[in-house]
Length: 605
Image (tube, rainbow, N blue to C red; front, top):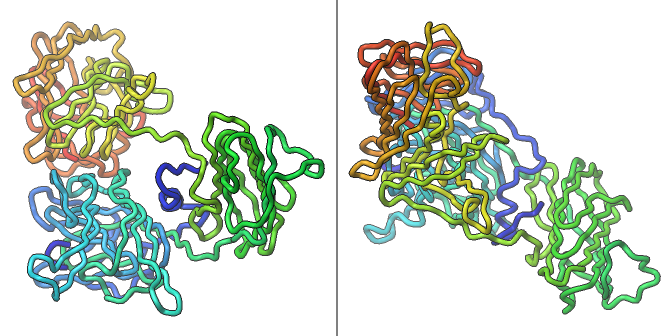
């Protein structure tokens, strides 16, 4: 809002808890009608399809049907917020949203804490009021210039263009109360925008500006802001974590000195130490190298259902037994799933430390019905050795060769990653003359390439969009009905390398069917996408350029197309008088363009 106001713990146990959706069942909010909401205003309607106009502010057009919520306020009717009947406490919320050009909205957890939705297309330095931001609090009693406070900007701009579907996932922890008094603040444990984490473990000392109420509660509704701009929503689901957690009771331990690679006969061993404990821990006594800890007690189950345990041990092995049956057995990390009924269940955990060179560590987490994953051990947990990421920035136009893993078992070996200071980047496959992925935000994570011995690969550090498949960009078709060849064999494809222009941007060149191709891609003004120009020097009969091979292609206007369920736009800027062709393909639809001298098009995302 602008005008209104396993076990994998590297830094803290909280981070582990906030990521997991656990074994809880997500509740899908019905969008076939408005029965899931309180008194929807007249600007809200149901739709089967919605589109934005890239040239007009605050405009969304929709088609009759259901499945999509569309809100179109205007000057006469400013609109109202849409409030769910469902109440939530600790919860994960996932939804798709679409912004109109210049539009403004928000998602309020419990109707009180806003994650901002905004058309931030091309913004380089996002603030709390940009998409993915946690909106600020407001106090009219504070001095001028300081009335707004505690807003949290997203780590980077992962937002997409208006008219594209975007995905938001929020892991929220509600405030906690005892005797009507708040004893713990609410937290945004994690916010992911288009698959990229943009917020992590942000404490909320109170409600954000323009919330539905100023008080804080244990349970509240989901609120979709509807009085600021045109916005659409679909696929709304809420996973509530409101069930009672199990707990360990009567926990006792015995410690045995020595090296045990299998469980010993305890009746024949004198313990080094024994006692009771409130929590599982690997550092009960000063032993560091070879020892065994055995815990016994009761696992008090309060909710029936399936429980998943994640046991981690460092420098040895361990086991977890419930009802005298092995639930988890591990050398380092192991998981087990058990169906449990309410009651006190016999519990036994063994940790044997027998590798002297390893750090001591023991961790146990559990996930159950209606609850997030939480830890039953202390903070001295076993974890993989932390590796500081090796990040590559692009303060100037930057090109870097690497391998890229496109899909499981599919590695692009001749890839060039091209970064820009506008924070719009792409990767080019020199074996096919194809741009196969593009993204906005950070440039590259080179950790897998350069850490230790490395494997030569890199991965994007921003909000990635990847083509469905990789095929040669140019091919010869005697008839436009013929199938597109899957590789470059028989094409005479020969890479001629690339040269950098005066701004250090690559121009790729290759031969195909004895025709020289020059391929130049530039970042558009405002960082709104990529502009690509393909030029041919020499004979060019029956050559076609494939602009896209996608699950679906939607024609928006002459020369403007939406692809892959409104994931990105393709705009044909210059076609040399040729007409584009949309035809069926093995995965959905192809967009082809005959090429005789030069074509230009843009990828907007």
